[in-house]
Length: 322
Image (cartoon, rainbow, N blue to C red; front, side):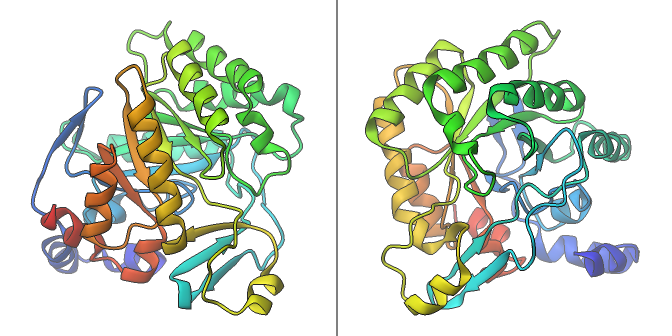
């Protein structure tokens, strides 16, 4: 990405790359936002909003930055990102490494001033809590991030589903989640123009937990769900068991996640009572994968591990096929 940023300073190369990777414009209008195409990049890649111009040039209809926390955070010890090439999968335990919300907000505002607001790529802000913040005070971290980024991003995603921050997934329980989301919506609805608010959920939830999330989504008037985050499961992998065991803990993403995340997406779509937006994520590599997510109920999709394995042409390939 640093090399891409460097060569993009040369106008003729920038022009060639844009022509090579930009898909046909297939605008999608969702929640008052105009997405150039429905293919986005999930959170965790451009954590600090450093590469928005380069990712826009590669054709992404939207990019989700973060996960952002109030204070800068180094994340977990390295090594913390691993390939399971035989499975077309990744395991990561990054631990919300980011430069902190204030520095990221400055960078986002600088990027916005360089863009034509009517044409710029949609940017989402994925927000979380610092590792040292106890769960009973987690809502304070989410509120800080929301207030700092509300004028810098087009939508928010509340991340309580990463497996790499100790105790974070406990915040997916109904009462804890209600406390966070209701406080954010209280702030949000007092803005002149509220920012769409999404919740990102884990693929490992039971049906009763999914039912609770659906009820809570209606109660606090969420705008949508991102389905899903990485999984802690290691079932059905082709990679050697000793290799997987030696890697240790972390969230698994990529092809092995596809069926589970799509099943959760389909369940939510079939059981939701109110209309809200679903972003399908997990194991998308080809246009057939994207189509299956859309048929399961997604209006937008996100790639991540597929981007790593398929390369920078993935957006054009999927979007043009759709």
